[in-house]
Length: 366
Image 1 (cartoon, helix red, strand yellow):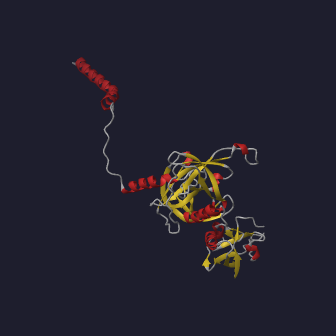
Image 2 (cartoon, helix red, strand yellow):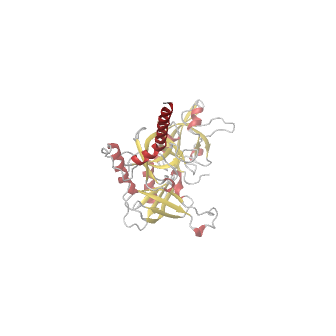
Image 3 (cartoon, one colour):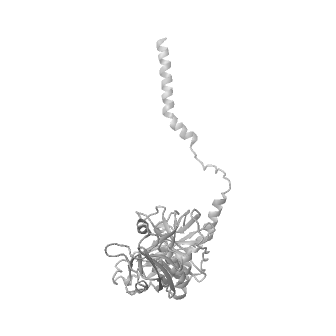
């Protein structure tokens, strides 16, 4: 009896061991999809998805890839030792085939081309540049069918929190769309030429190298800014991208197309950053330095002393309060070169009014 019970136990143990070993193979055999699987039905796209898809389909033909390099014949010129291709994004501006991009995309190069959404690659020429605004206008040449110009919005009434979309060519990946919101407004954007662009639009829509010069759009597919700057320790997207406001782009582009040059109204000062002013508890624009023979120098404005004492602080311009350099720049640009602006300047406990005539700061003074 004991032997028979032992035999039965061994039988079941062997059976269980066999089942345990065979189980993965049986599952694979039984459940493997050896033929194409049936497609699961889905509901309709959401309204948000349909809106985003339509936005891309409408705007993407107005976005081009921009390529710039140094002509190999010019490599013996000083500073022209390399001929690496610089890439960026461009925006079709009008029916004449003008394209807006960032100045830094083409800086230091003299041979240019564009790749259209249609697949056509064509040469382009430079119409004009505005380094102080990081804007360049190019002209498409010999296109079979000029692409559709982008729809223009405005940046004066933007609100933090509204949707924002970017289309560009990050890392050379053409026609890439990213989405986010407007994270902040009135950012000050320094350019490589030492100028500051006021009213910058901050967005968390992912931007990467190659997006430069591309459009920042509102939910209606209108251009509200030109992506220009990434704030990141690695140079890649970190959720902080800055775009030049379209109101600035619209004005600068028109001047470049008509004259090839954009005057930069100013008075010849270097101003402290908003951070420095805030730390000093000062509401206004701290004058750091004054250019010799500039309108500011002629008006008697003084900068920070050698000992570090604050000199003049601009607190009003044409009767409007000035809190930062963006406020001052906005009034200067609204007035224009050659116009007189009345400034209220404080120095310690004393305040005075001075009149300055705006000069073109894109030219060298002093």
